[in-house]
Amino acid sequence: MGVYNRTPLAFERGEGARLFTTDGEAYLDCMAGIAVNALGHANPKLVQAVKDQAEKLWHVSNIFTIPGQEKLAKVLTDATFADVVFFTNSGAEAVECAIKTARKYHWAKGHPERIDIIGFDGSFHGRTLAAVNASGNASYLEGFGPPMPGFIQLPFDDMEALKAAVGPTTAAIIVEPVQGEGGARCLSVESLRALRQLCDETGTLLILDEIQCGLGRTGKLFAYEWAGIEPDIMAVAKALGGGFPVGACLATAEAGSGMTVGSHGSTYGGNPLAMAVGLAAMEELNSPELLAHVREVAGYFTQQFEGLKTRFPDVVADIRGKGLLIGLKLVTPNREFMQHARDQHLLIAGGGDNCVRLLPPLNLTLEEAREAVEKLERACEAARAQAKAAA
Ligand SMILES: *Cc1c(COP(=O)(O)O)cnc(C)c1O
Image 1 (cartoon, protein in one colour):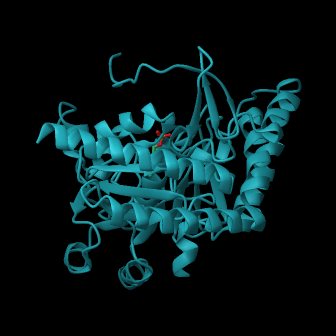
Image 2 (cartoon, helix red, strand yellow):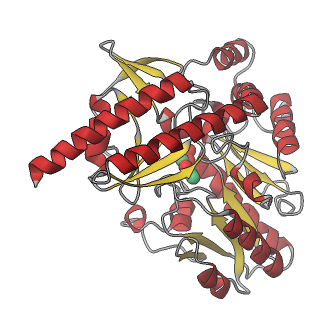
């Protein structure tokens, strides 16, 4: 189906932060499959995990005990607020599970009227019907029938609007601590704490969508740690398989208590092959050295990008995001800027609000980061020249 607006670039091989086209051209990858290849391409540990497991067992039904699932669930619950985990194949399915878990919780507690999921402008939660309804992006909803009941959208980071909206039919609030597609907008520590407090006061469940900002991307294993709060439910995916499709919905024992035998399921979710890769990836992602490295490279980037903003105020309007989820809000059109970057053999992602996003592998070296800055500087020059020529 013609649902993608594709760039005519085809890659056949990757190594770390490099991608090589079918005709042998090298590109520096600072989008990493939209935060998926967090450990770089063809990471030897992940490759080995896939090979080893591929020779043993790929798939068995979830009617059986799957030891890899128990292991990865333990790793995830030990590292987070969560007590229970449901494994999925994608981010949207993790969000789907989060929404069902929240509604089922209230239903099981004798409050079937509490169905409303409150989401925010500029959010992105995936493309299933529930996920597009939760994010409320009009262009993703158009043509897919009437908006589903039980979903409410509010302005991003507007505590007064939120307080006014939470009521007796509210089930949960769903939010990305750092928006991805929306343009790397970041919730402050104060806002996250205020959200947690409001949820506590009203018996509302807090669902964090850390599919993009989680798993080391912000320089902590999960972005919520920066605020010293904990969610009730969390969706993760993307980096969890480092490129192999794995997602997970995490919950506290309490929030997950409605999800009893038969409530939910998945054929592929949590199969042995996926779990083997997830375990290998988690071992790398949850390392203090890697997280410190993310903070170091992020600090370097932020400083350099502030410099670009000063030198190119006609191109770069604002620097946003957290850690290695960085948004540059542009003055010139972001789609054109992505092409200028590609002309320099640098891959970056687009984003809402006329942003471009950098989401490099978390193990990007400082030398590669310097190279990315040089390429971006040349892209800024090209954007300036294009704007001048058009004026
Ligand atoms: C990518 C993403 C999703 C959807 O994940 P899929 O694997 O594409 O279904 C949901 N939420 C956020 C924040 C994302 O970045």
